[in-house]
Amino acid sequence: MMPKIDGFEVCRLIREKSMVPIIMITARSEDFEKIMGLDIGADDYVIKPFSPSEVMARVRAILRRLAQDNPTSKNVLQIDNLVIDLTSYLVKIDGLEVKLTKKEIELLWTLASTRNKVFTRDNLLNSLWGYDYYGESRTVDTHIKRLRAKLEEFPHPKWDITTIWGVGYKFEELNDEKKDNT
Image (tube, rainbow, N blue to C red; front, top):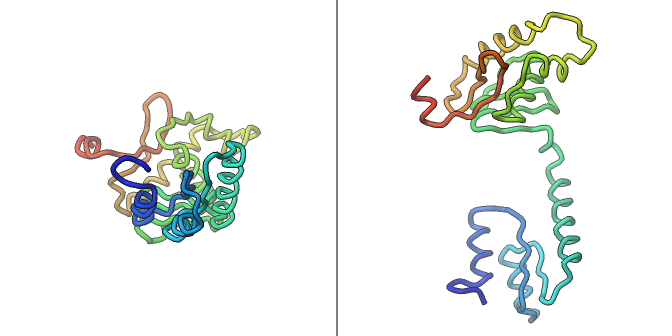
């Protein structure tokens, strides 16, 4: 009943490109229509009139199911050709393992999981070494230097660890303009 294209066709087109959850909310209540909606890829089928709280419960159920299907997704981060897996403390670029220390992996994870956020040395010291660390704040610089050297062995034209002079460091996704200027 939508203009130009119906919900069944929209669902079919989405399923060709994505596995994003789909809940169809429709006035079509015939059994064959429900079956067709579910068969073409809808995860759920709700008939109007509907209870908003019931729809929200159905959304939560689908999200719970997705979280169970991919429990390690919270510990795996992928940005372009970089994969950081905190479960196995493994970093790969273009499918090749990058040999990093535990602290280098945690440093990379901290920066990459909050892309474009600038971290001061103190931020990184407190989050990775703890508040009770009494060593030199330049230990962050040393770890960044070693981490960059190891990452430079692999191509990564779309991301980098950037120094923000006088402030700190950030993991930055690079666009074509920035790549040309560097």
